[in-house]
Length: 163
Image (cartoon, rainbow, N blue to C red; front, top):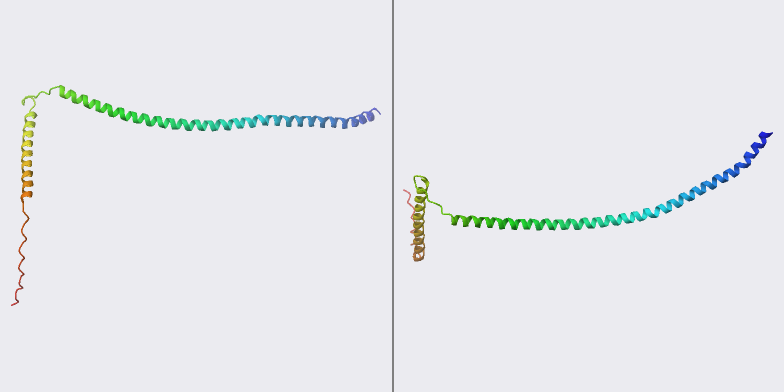
């Protein structure tokens, strides 16, 4: 008989155990919902902050690119100006150096090309004078030339008679 009493007590405690189980499950569900709600607020705030950081990063990147582009253009322009100035300065220094240093004329037996160079320079000067004189004569002839008289009309040809 003891067995029947234990079974009855077990069935009597089952609804209480079920109720306790359901209460625990409800408590857990409530805790889960609260945790989700509390976790959602920081997540939304973090997403808002992240979006703000991304927008600010894009703005900084855009400004940086434009600044770098501007700096690159200025550097290129400055480099071109400096290169031009250096070239001019070097050319001027070379010209001054050439003027300051006398170039000795080597004798013909040491450097035979010097004599030939002088001969060719003299020939070029003589030819230049001749060309200039001819050009002057042509110009004078053109200004003094009178318009030519019209040609006499040509006589018509007669056809040969057939024999």
